[in-house]
Image 1 (cartoon, helix red, strand yellow):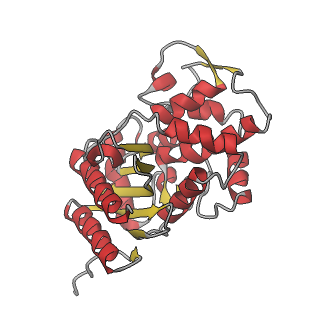
Image 2: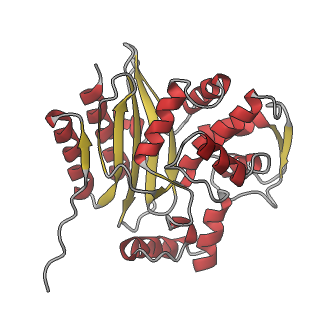
Image 3: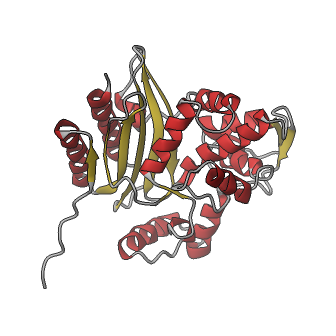
Length: 311
């Protein structure tokens, strides 16, 4: 039997130097047993580098960025009020480790603060409470109307946990094993890890979205301004920002994690005016809930990309 051909990512880059950086990031990921997509683009010059940028990937909590944009656009155009009060009851709300999803008692929160919780601490209950106001179908339709052809929104956040529990009950270590096995075979037991049924995006579509948000080229300008502010409030800095910690840099991002996918999208801004949008979408074959070396590899790749693309 002939050996299976080695995986070789399809790299994109504006020149030979940028291609070297893209290949080095892909090689570092591969050495850790990670596959995925990566794209970094200078918002000012359009120069970019990355690999496998058009592969559709289940987004996990990265989907909260387009959800937020649609909700903020509805607020900016007067469809509903950011001060509107919403009660979230743990008996019926979504599962998750942070924010309202971790509460034990009902809480009443304004719509604007649901957005803050959703983006700053990746609160699933806040996200699904917003999806009671702006439905999945409405979010998906708005993205299509805005020309975001590489993004699809198909389900609520809690659907990820429902599908995993439907396959394995409460044994999420088994769910992780199934996710890894199915990633190799392409036959998905957990529906929300199947690109044909999940909330999905490509690295190129996500970077396009960030570029349009930072340039005020999509939705209402008040909505894009508020989305930039809220993404700047993210408290998780263990991926893209891990190697970009400096008083002269600002990273505005959104992570996404569920079983073996570990993602982040964001924009790195320098004090001198450089703007680089990035999407790092990864999955690994490691049966571990925590993988700090993979998180750090995302950060190292982000630093190398930013240094190569800054003016």
